[in-house]
Amino acid sequence: MPKRNLTTVSSLGAVSCVVLPLLIGCTGVMSGDPNSNGQMTPGGLVPGATGGGGGTSSTGGAGPTGAGTAGTGPISQSSKPEVDVMTIRRLNRTQYTNTLRSLLGTKQDPGSKFPPDDLSFGFDNIGEALSLQPLHIELFESSADAVLTELFALPASDPNRSKVLSCDAQTGGHACVVSTVSAFAEKAFRRPVTDAEIAPFVTLAESHGTTGTGASDGLKLALKGVLLSPHFLFKVELDASPTAKDVHKLTAYELATRLSYYLWSNMPDAALSASAKSGELLTDAGLTSQITRMLADPQAQALVTEFAAQWLNIRRVAAVKPDPTTYPTFSADLATAMQTETSMLFSELLGQGRPLTELLTANYSFVNSTLATFYGMAPPAGSGFTKVQLAGSHRTGFLTGGSFLTMTSNPTRTSPVKRGKWVLEQLLCSPPPPPPAGANIAALDGGTPQSMRAKLEQHRAKEPCHTCHSLMDPIGLAFENFDGVGAYRTSDQYGAIDATGTLNTANGPVNFNGADQLIPIVSNDPRMAPCAASKVLTYAVGRGFTVDDAIALQNVLAATDKSGQGVRGLIGSVALSESFRSRRAVGE
Image (cartoon, rainbow, N blue to C red):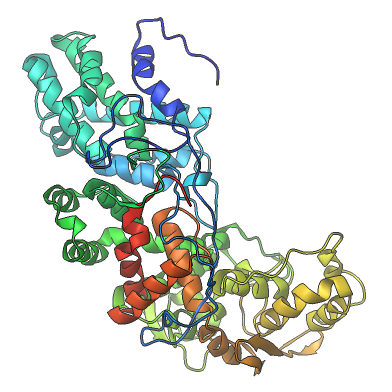
């Protein structure tokens, strides 16, 4: 990163002197007193080991919640500790935008100007992947300028202004600066602050003058410093020592931050902060109460737009480009409707506490006139989405919906390989081995014209290809009654569709004919529930969980079954788990 001139007495130089040394150091673990409510003394950023990995798992299908039974499924017996090492986590683009909006009342979308956050284990909120580049620092700075300029331009009567600027710095003097900076930093840092912590920001403000416009400009500069602090940009959690191996509970404020960014992708609200302040959040009853309240809040839709959208790859539908000659009925409106259908299905499972298996077996869905017409159903009245029954539509749950079928296809044809691989990876956490060197899947698009089944049979006959494709192809071929954009068909240019196959399960090989017979097999596979639990834990905690995390998975699934609340219970059980409520600095 090019050096900045810090000798110039300028706004940029002053802020940089306060926060850049901290930002540059945010690459490892942080030390401090874990009983200090998350406060950290200067110099507390200590380079250290980054967090551990992992990111796949297994699934069980059938407990009373549909989330599986904790004692079933091929969970590894050589388990990692329930609480493992974590690296410090930067706010991702969505979290950053939501936090600024809650903090300042702005409607700006600063996160949209940032480069996409890197994915790890399928999600964009994993600590080890959320690096801090020079471009990020520049964009954090310009974003802080933009939202604060907007704030200070608001009239004194505006509630967004008075929420932050409760006194007039031009006339209120030192007391006004201290109270404003202290209150703002406490909300921004998501914990109490000390006089020593805010002193540099107060000094920064008063260096521009204590009266007139200088006082106002100085206060704006101090608030900018808060927004550039690692305590705002990162979710800071402390250990007594960066080399300690012991597991310890998060402080109440650290737990509140984890919970709010898990359920809402946003900062804690006043009620959650109050629960942290009283210590009630550290009790099972207090935490359960907050989980219940927060899941009932509209902000919990973030679990759909962030968690489900990434787990189920809903976002990918917007990026696919089916060939318009091959699929002339496909349109941007149809793609959006497909995404909305899947989002509303997951929202229903979450909101109503429906079984996890219903993600695949639901006999209902949500359609508007565009999607209903495409599915060959009677369009609902009005322009919005309506819950409809799927009887007679050849569709059941997510795997026969347009979003899955379209995103796992090629521009001019279906891709049984992609469809089968997706089910194995995302629903069963049993990815096939990587393709051997020199594998040429592109050959499926050339040669003698014949059905996809015939081409795959020839491909599987080659010894290097047999192992992987014998796992993927039978699953993918079950969906051949749906074309490359999800339209139902009984034949293609090569004749009648053959969607038969055999799937090797824990109970031996099972024959099926078509998606309607395959779906119950997958939904009852003992790998499904642990797989889903690993996905939720990964997203919630911000590090990868795998089948090696047997203790964590078993405990979460047992609690989920006990709750009787299906997907909703799974979300809550993760937040109540030891993996979520504790941390360690160094692994075994």
